[in-house]
Image 1: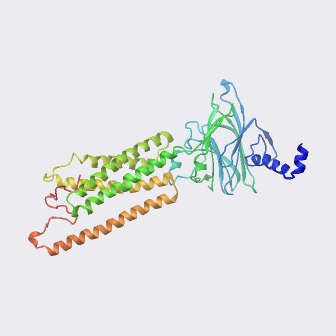
Image 2 (image 1 turned 180 degrees about the vertical axis):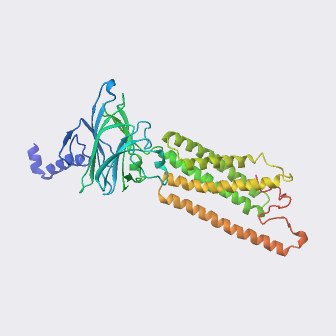
Image 3 (image 1 turned 45 degrees about the vertical axis):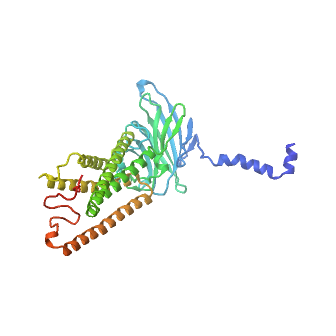
Length: 415
């Protein structure tokens, strides 16, 4: 029957072969037998496709007795460099899951002295927007042997290593990655993409069970950025502008607008601050500049909001210095907010369009402020020139604030 089917349809066999071969060809080959460039053949017990960047990991695990320490792990990590000057890395994090920080890594690359594979302990300051050069350093694992092969024509790279694991450790937090270049013997930072940010997982060297990584806390990071941009980068500036530029033309609308923007911005700021604390706890990494600026902003903003109930009466002698203090704190929060938002962009590294969009918002607000400043002064000067001296509010500034008794309208211009 099969003969008659194939005779009747010559394409049947070809279609059958395509269906059988296509799935196999779409998968990354995961070898248990590898031949190094020097001709040495090594066979491993297990192998897994890491499902990221075309990387595979082959390994054998030899348990040892308690008196001898942990077991011996022989590994071969395979990937392809992104360029001739690039690097490839594989490592184990003994402290944190899903984290680059603290990883004990073996990094392979070509240098002037040939192919190198060196140990690096990855510090937290690598997450800084301008990280220092990474230097080779002792790691918290005993590496019994290691070497690397980089095929010049294909840039296929294999890191071979024999590592003594700590006692009773068989489930590993593994981390791997690739980067574009090396400065001397210092690998430079890799791109911030979904593939590079999810290059981690767990590996049970005894059973072969593997879990793949995802971009850690990606939704929380994005929400943290969005909430804080709206709170500190939009609502707070608009609240300040409403006081200065709407007050001369209304008796009370400016006050309600100012309070609404500042209070809503503060509430969102509290939410964003909490998200930041959660992110720090989960990642184990501390972005000191971003964190410290955030703490200062949050403390100053709290003082501003407390002004709703803790401000002197308009006629009180302390009202004038209090107004100076309130203005100063407000503008300080504004400046720190803009600086810290750009710090956040450098850390999160989103698509450039988001950073450009916020730059556009800042430019628009700045342009509006300039136009309103000109209009406010023009109206004040015109009224001053047309009004008899005795009818002038000589002690008033263009934005309606009294420089003498600071009485102003029903609402005095400050919280």
